[in-house]
Length: 180
Image (cartoon, rainbow, N blue to C red):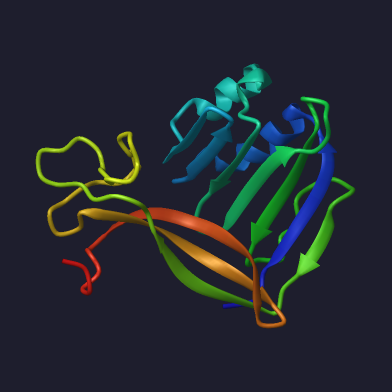
């Protein structure tokens, strides 16, 4: 896989972050959103980006939207609530539009998979994990043959060290053979 790159820009407004996310409007994408009291992992719902366009206050303070060819992350950049750092992570050399983006190159990109907590059994409406005291929701179809969920990901290496992991998609998986 060709070495990827990360494009970073600091000091973006919520409107500029939403404009970046509009790339995902017509594709099969997922989002991971974070704020102090909650974390969500879900498919990008139709209309979500249009809602964000009309009211940027609905933009979570930290998150990532991802699909097969790119991931866009954002996080607070300063003490001001309307200032963000954005990263566009991709295996292509397609730079985001506009000025002020800094590119960071990597030596190698390796495909990987991250198993998510919990298992779902027939009749359950969510995944369960004894060590986590709440239902776990993942945006994948459940089946008895694939009762677990994972994130397909790409590790970006520099000098043989993983520097960043980009999410690609959420998928159902079989239970690893070494587990009961």
